[in-house]
Amino acid sequence: MRISMHFQGVGLCLGLLFIAVNADFMDDGVEVEDFSENSDESNIKDDSSSGTIKYKTPQPIGEVYFTETFDSGNLAGWVLSKAKKDDVDAEISIYDGRWEIEELKENRVPGDRGLVLKSKAKHHAISAVLAKPFIFADKPLIVQYEVNFQEGIDCGGAYIKLLADTGDLILENFYDKTSYTIMFGPDKCGEDYKLHFIFRHKHPKTGVFEEKHAKPPDVDLKEFFTDRKTHLYTLVMNPDDTFEILIDQKVVNQGTLLDDVVPPINPPREIDDPSDKKPEEWDDRAKIPDPTAVKPDDWDENEPAQIEDSSAVKPDGWLDDEPKFIPNPKAKKPEDWSDDMDGEWEAPHIPNPACQIGCGEWKPPMIDNPKYKGIWKPPMINNPNYQGIWSPQKIPNPDYFEDDHPFLLTSFSALGLELWSMTPDIYFDNFIICSEEEVADQWATDSWELKIAVANANEPGLFRQLTTAAEERPWLWLMYLVMVGLPIALVTSFCWPRKVKKKYEDMGPKKTELCKLQSKATLEQEAEEEKAPEKPEDLQEEKKPSEAEVIIVEKEEVIGEPEEKNEEDGETIEGQEEVSKLSKSGSEDEMKDADESTGSGDAPLKSLRKRRVRKD
Image (cartoon, rainbow, N blue to C red):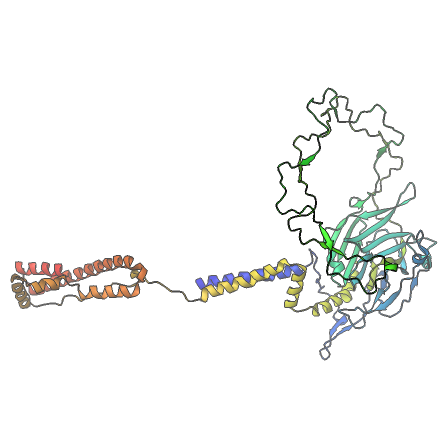
C-alpha cells in the first residue's frame, strides 16, 4: 500500500509538470495545429531517401474570385503603385517601397514562395484585379491569406484592402485614399496589437460612406506578431449579417454587423437640437460657499506651512568654515590645455573629505508648523437654486434610417496592400477569396498546414523549449524546481533505511517448560519431602528468578534503548506476569491429568498440587 501511494504521488507530480509545460506552449485559446482529416496526401509527400518534403502548388477545388500563391516567382498580374500620398513631405510621399518574391527565412518549404515587403520606413502599395467582382447578395464572403513577421514587428501593418468596384479604379493610382469596401488584417504600433475588420457603409440618404470598426478580439494577439511563425488569417461574412474572424482556423472574434460594430450601422432616432442654447440664469452648481460663514478671529493666514525645528542642535564635529567641495589635489592640467584658447585651467572639485559630519553654515531642519491653517475659505453647502446639468432638447434625427441588412455592401473588384512599416521582411502568401468554406479549408490544408508541419518538425527539443519558456516567464523556474524536487524527495523518503523499534508486543511470550507427568509413587515421595522443613538454601533458591524470567529480562535489555530503560522495566514486569499465568494454567491442566491417571484422591496429593502451582 505504501509503495502504491508513493508511486501515485510521483505520477501526480509528473502529470502536473506535463500540464504546466503544455499550457505555456499553447496559444491563448487558439490551437495552432488542427489538421483536416481530408487533406490531400498528394501535396505532402515524405521522401524517405532524402528526408525532405515535396511541395506542390495548391489548386482551388471550387469556384473562387481570386487566388495567388506566388510560386511562379514573378509578379504577373500585380501592379505597383506610382501614386503619391497627400499632406506629407515630398521625400516620403511616394510609394517606393520594394517588393520581392522569396522563400521563408526559417522553416522554408522548398518550392513554396511568397510576397515579401522588403523596405524599412517606406510606403508600399501593390494591387491585383480579381478574376471577377464579388457582389454582396446571397453568398458568403471568405477572405483568407497568410502572414509571417519574419523579423518581428515594431510598427507596421499587414492588412489588405478590397478595393471598391468603381468605374474610375486605376491600380497605378492606388494610394491611401482609394475607395475600398473592406480592410482586414493585423496591425501593430507600440504595444497596441490589432486585428482590423473595417467596412465602409454607405448612408442611404446622404450617400456618404462611413467606416464601421468591428469590436476588438477577446484574445491576446501579441503571440501572432512575435513568434515569427506563419499564421493564417480568415474573414467570413455571412448573408445573415453575421461575421467571424479566425486565426489559424480558430475563431477569435465573431458577432453581427448590426450590434458589434462602432459606430453602429443605424443612427439614433433623435439628436440634440443644435439651435437650443443654455439660458444665462441656469444654475448648474450643485454646491456653493456658505454665505453665512465667518472667518474665526484666531485664524492666522500669515503662519507659514513649515518652521525651523527649535529643538534641533548642531551636531558635534560640524565644520562651519570648511567648504563642502574642494579642488581635486591629484588632478593635473592636461598637456594640450591652452590658456589662450581654453581659458584658465581649474582643477575639478571633489567632496571635501573633512566634512564627515557636515560643513558650511548649519541650519536647523524644517518641520510642519502646528499653527498653520492656510487661507480661510467658507464651507460648501447644497445650492438651494440648483437646477441640474443642462442639456439641449431632443429633436427627430433628419438623417435617420434603418438598415436591417448591412451585408449588402459595395461590390469590390481588386485586392491591394497599402502599407507602411518600420520592420522589413513581412511575408504574405496564398491569398484566396471565395464563398465556400470547403474550398478555403482545402486551400489551407494544401498550403498553410504544410508550413506548420515543417515548423513543428524543426521545433527544438523539450529541454530547449523549457529553457526558452522560462526565459520569457521567469516564474517557471520555480515550477520546474518544485516539480523535479518533489518526486526526488518522495523517492528518497521511501527508499532511505529507517530504524524500527520493536515493542514487546511483537515478541510472543516464551512458553515455559511445563511439568512432566509423574507416577503415583513419585508423587508420594515428593509429598514426604514437602513435610520436611525447608533448608535456608532452598529458601534462597526460591527467591531466585526462574530461567524463563531471566531470558525475558535479558532480551528486553538487548532490544530496548538505553534512554527508555524505565519504560522497558515496566514492560518486563508485565511480560513476567503473562508468562507466570501461562505456566500456572499449564501446570493445573497437567496436574489434573495426572490425578485422573492415578485415580487417587488423597489430601496430601491435593496439597502438593497447590504447592507446585504457587512455586511456579
